[in-house]
Image: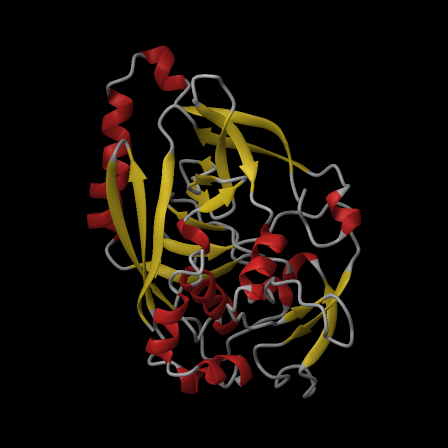
Length: 315
């Protein structure tokens, strides 16, 4: 999964630049406040590329985290017990398409992929680190900051992050949003490095905060609906460059055309409700792993929407 690592090092400059720069200093190791990524989806045997422009001005830590995951090949597939799986859109709603942390495992003798399965995120990242991949840390489980959680400081208004000069992006159609799962009654605390370096926190760069708003891992969604999504508690960090051309007339048109070929009964089962689905089964904190927080996902199963790759096209 770290096949893109060396290419990233060549594009950025040196490993030392990544390893020693803080998030605030990473601007000197990059080429733009607006890097770009291409997410390629596979549906019904065809590939559909969607290009996004990210914003380091709005969400520097989230953008850095997403780029590092992409460069490590995290989103390009996962190998479990010798079998390779592609990540899927695990929740397909009229308003948003959620992905980034689940795959479909074979559950029938005929090999039909039906079981929605969560990636063991923390151990997957730990394995990448041991293989030589470098991740920038902003959230730690201990005050001494020796144990990273590989999650991200939540850069949104509900977590006290404000942009005095306004935001580049907003929670509108085409928005790329990083989110975290609800943690139930979990009260775990973490130590975080503020993206503003402490400028809006009396100069204190590191701060003890609740884990939940600072627990985003690899899950993200593209907003597709007309109702404004929650941007108070989730981080908008990118925007589709050509939503109409690549989404409306591309991937979404292909999905709509496929649904039109189904009879009424089959169309109603295009997405299968995964209910109840227990969240956080691989969370860093044991108490949260043992919790009973559940969610209902509408998952395309008979014709899944896969993530083929996430590639950084501009740094």
